[in-house]
Length: 175
Image (cartoon, rainbow, N blue to C red; front, top):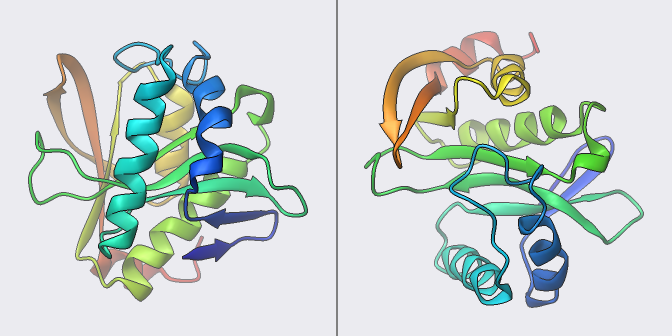
């Protein structure tokens, strides 16, 4: 599966992405607002294998994000599923810090949102964001999402940003 934006290609993860993702997961800035950093390659491999398994099973999953004309993965953006929030599909994203502040992850998140509603016909998507993570909150807001709830997620206060398909349909073309 592949999505394209003006500047990026979002594609399915591959086993050869493990080393690049392991470097990113070991980066404290990339993993800020998470349960710690993955310093072990086997944890990154487990993540990639889980995502590739979802993809093979037809379950919406995260995409590897690359710049057009480059094959280096600079992060991910796509669908995550958490037992702590059953029935919800999260649009989650992380980007290599050297690519921050260029609007790239907002562009990717919009493509994923549009895919969720136009192609997959999902009724609703969420983004789980730590209240202090202002850049991620701005991405969700630019993606048309609003704070729907506040929960404790994996021991941390978490804002649940949400958008439903009806709102997306009503606002198509406005973003």
